[in-house]
Length: 55
Image (cartoon, rainbow, N blue to C red; front, side, top):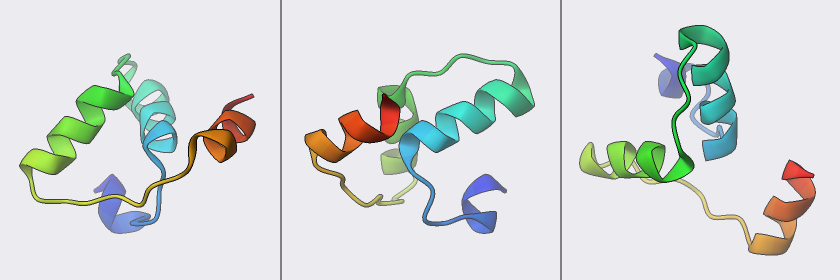
């Protein structure tokens, strides 16, 4: 799936892919919780860098 193809993908990138591929709006928190339930950890980005990436 999506994580297997690009394991270094950020949560906001997963959100964009879900929007484009499945036409669904999912919050970042929902994505994070789903990954955590499956034991998948993600890298962290400090808030200032995340702000720059999203603006």
